[in-house]
Image (cartoon, rainbow, N blue to C red):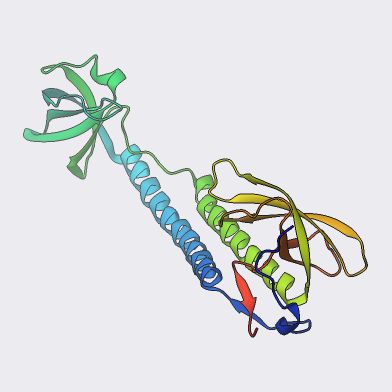
Length: 247
């Protein structure tokens, strides 16, 4: 049986220990802050977009005029969705206007150059026109808080992970654990290490922890830290997010 990187636990001091963030821990907190701010910014941005779209849709409904337009040009199909740009002409009080719009495949297959199609334009600004059925939509109001909630939740998970390791290192106890299994996690570059250790009271516990490094062989003794009141909370030592202020 071998021991990986023996550590003199006594030099790490008694609990509660003073701890600080590692570079990875600091980066994690920065990412969490960016996510939280980004969520708020996305929510504000979506609110502005929703208000602008709702105002435009309301204006088109109140002041829109429907007229006939003639297709004068069509681009070749483009993109994975095979959309086409369709250019059409229409007159408003004898003044000609030309607008280009995007048509979905199921619609442009029924359109040819020279065809007539219905368009709707703003009476106050005839240059702004839409093919019937392609009028501007409105971002549903229910979607506005989603990025705030999602990004805030992700930020909270990152902060929780840092705080969990901070508490574990500050208040935990050290032990040498024996590796009983190691396997590579699917869709991850990390390895899941399963180990067993004895607490100060002599009780045996099994813990699991991930490592991005080369996994130790089964039977190897590795340093771990566990929560004194809840030994089920343990991790391989050293931790990636926090480290002792000294030692």
